[in-house]
Structure formats: structure tokens, C-alpha cells
Image 1: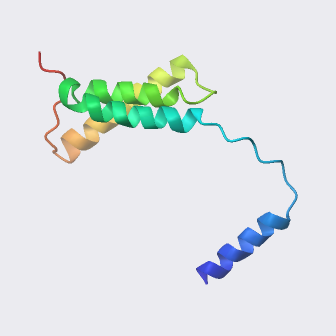
Image 2: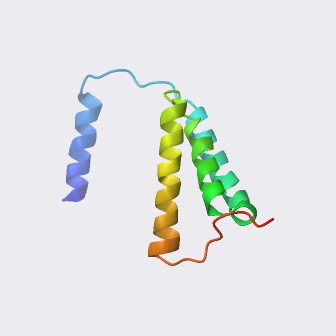
Length: 100
């Protein structure tokens, strides 16, 4: 049943008129991959809070519609959510801040 519905949707998309497909841009996926790698490199030496905040800021620069104020607010919110979820709700032993 699921395959039949998928085939019907695919055939409808092939024969329907619509806007042309945009050219593929590498900027978004590139910055997301860089953010993932940066998070993996920063989580142990810097801790969860700086690593999450910086990884989010790196990944958001991949968007052409980025605005700095909204990005900063979103990064703070995402960092707070990660700390609440992983440290307090799931009780995972993450280091929050860098050890000097």
C-alpha cells in the first residue's frame, strides 16, 4: 500500500507543471559538515556549552537568509535546550565548561 501511494505521488510529480529545479548549492551542506566536525573536535576540550553554541553558529552561516541577531538568539536557545536535555533530564556526564 505504501509503495503504491509513493508511486502515485512520484508519477504525479513527474507529469505536473511546476517551477524549475534550482541549481544545487554546496554552501549549506558544507557548513553543516564543518559544524559537525567542529563540534566533535570541541566537545572534550571546551565542554558542551561552548561547543554547542559555536557549532550552531557555524552551521547557520550556511544559509543565505541568516541574520545575526536571530542566529544568536537561536544558538542560545539551542544551547540551553541541549544542556537541559542531556545534563539534567538524561543525566549524562557532560562537561559543561572548559577546564583550565
